[in-house]
Length: 258
Ligand SMILES: CC(C)(COP(=O)(O)OP(=O)(O)OC[C@H]1O[C@@H](n2cnc3c(N)ncnc32)[C@H](O)[C@@H]1OP(=O)(O)O)[C@@H](O)C(=O)NCCC(=O)NCCS
Image 1 (cartoon, rainbow, N blue to C red):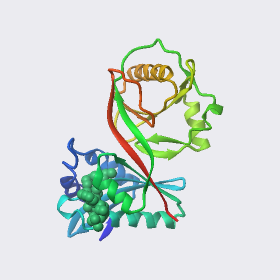
Image 2: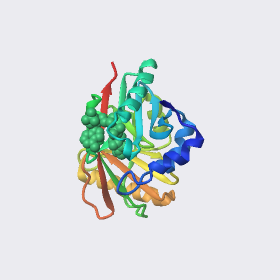
Image 3: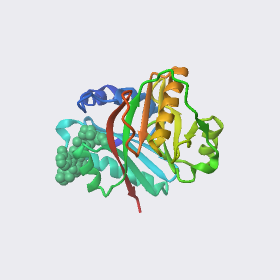
Image 4: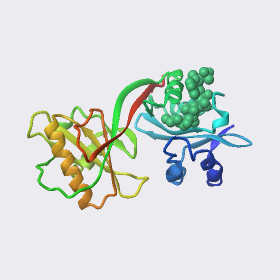
């Protein structure tokens, strides 16, 4: 009943993933990427009626795109898909499973709780438009500053920030900070692997002034590098700014698999 997806499944899956949320869905934009990354699973009864993608990295599995066709919900199918992936993760000796759920998506939160996931952290998603504005003082990180930062967002996956990644981001000047006005604010800049010209920023906000300084730099960076979109993920609520749009708040759900 559960199998790996094939390219020929695309049409029937997208057919039930069109109007998932009030704003639509994003599966059509990531399907090809997820298929090429592997670990895209379907559940079927004659034809596909559910899907979920898994991304395995250092000691964690990331679950994304859980979808069940509307007339097949509440039959335990999503739970089956999740359990299937957890079993694969355990075979790989992976300790943790994560997923990200909109705090207003009660069915999904309930499902995750039923499967023993706990709210690990809560993150805010903001967007800001690129804009030329170059009067801010920003520094590129000295590695020593980052001992308290253990994860970052890469293509909407919360990943462990290991030493090699840290070094590589550091060398590319993708870690920036402002510490002129009290508590330091730090940001990690990455390119979306699934969406064109989309900058994804993990922001650790210290003082309001430092964060405003970083945001100003990021807007300018976005304009200079011709990004269309800037997406910001932050645990902290960010200062009110008319160019900064708060989109959604998410719970990062975590489960210890042993
Ligand atoms: C969320 C979703 C994946 C759940 O799929 P599902 O196959 O219906 O889930 P399950 O049948 O495995 O549900 C397991 C448990 O979750 C809870 N649950 C699921 N849907 C629920 C709902 N609408 N209301 C309340 N609880 C719900 C229940 O406790 C349920 O157990 P029960 O039926 O024995 O009471 C499905 O509703 C869906 O595709 N939603 C749209 C896409 C989405 O929100 N995806 C998740 C994004 S993070």
